[in-house]
Image 1 (tube, rainbow, N blue to C red):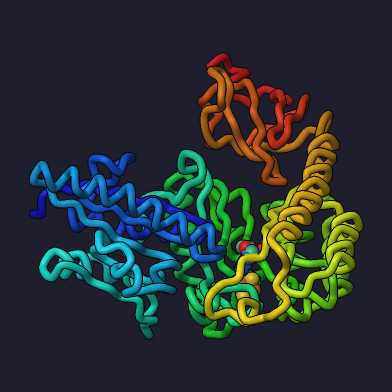
Image 2 (image 1 turned 60 degrees about the vertical axis):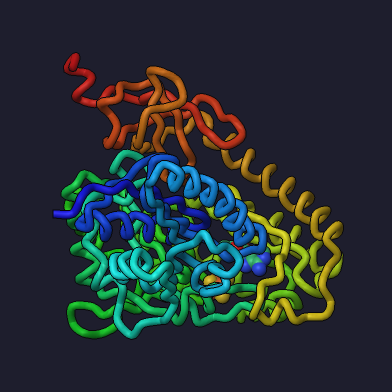
Length: 458
Ligand code: 5AD
Ligand code: SF4
């Protein structure tokens, strides 16, 4: 029996990393590692990193500076602390990380988490261990089955990775390099995982993947299934009341996925569909493989199928060659669609991508100014979307205690956080809520009708 050691995992970046962090924790549990909430008392620290923009990647090095000091303090007290770098920076930079930050003991790429126990043993023995190969086997076949929910709230909502990697090669994006070629997990494995989550009390599942709607995993019939079909299968699992999926590419919004928004009551009326730019010239330079009109067409088909949708997107401003006219086209697209929210970023050249080689890079000051204008436009749309919810009544899935005593917080069908004065016994339940007020990004509401439990005076 191995002695107990403490593990601290810090996740940066996207939901894929949140999911992977949990799977790493589960994989290390049989090795005697127990999760701790602070780095200070950890014996193993894992930084699960993001490489999407330069700022994200650099954050890791500043974090490593802090970790080095913790490690030195522990060493002064005769305690050995191991530091591991996982995720996309590990995948992209490999050995280079140990050269730049010698305090790092283990570097493990995003496809190799099932090798962690061996890598830790090797680092303890040899000083350090690096593994960033893209293996032929599937890490999910080897990682421990999730022992508990990968949750946003208290075990009520969970992410499940169904697809990884990307073959699209947008010219700004490192993902095809850090996460490799597109792969999909088999339908049966996903269903089994969702069934376990449902048994553990999860009510809402978000299927995740870098390009989730390109999902083409093997079905029980041995043929590739689409995401629409997978959703239909998952919706039948007892206990699962809500489904979402993210992140999608406009090209892969297939007919059956669009139809699923009409036909599956469990599929929430919300879609994150990055468009990046509203200019055809820039979309072509980004190798997005669709035009502005194609995007508008997808959205209009979706709204025909399900008129009540909250749409969100990602935008990049200042991609090489972007003129004021191109940027104006992006603002017009935003105006035409009306988003419930969006993420927008200044273009950040990433090593190894075609965009980084382009000669017509945009000035930082211009990028900042465009980002500011775009964010203002999006904030206005988000506020308008939220305001339109006031007076409406819809279902909220309660996830956790709220900011103030007596409040609990859940999510609307559109993914907005909703604060309600209600008993904490409702956490994990869906209740009908009437929206009374909005703030910048939260809604406030009151229970529309007392659920049976509360009415009985419980
Ligand atoms: N620079 C800025 N933003 C980027 N994104 C991806 N790569 C870059 C980059 N090099 C943004 C895109 C993507 C989101 C996850 O991050 O908008 O949809
Ligand atoms: Fe990156 Fe484009 Fe693939 Fe999305 S579709 S992960 S932006 S290369």
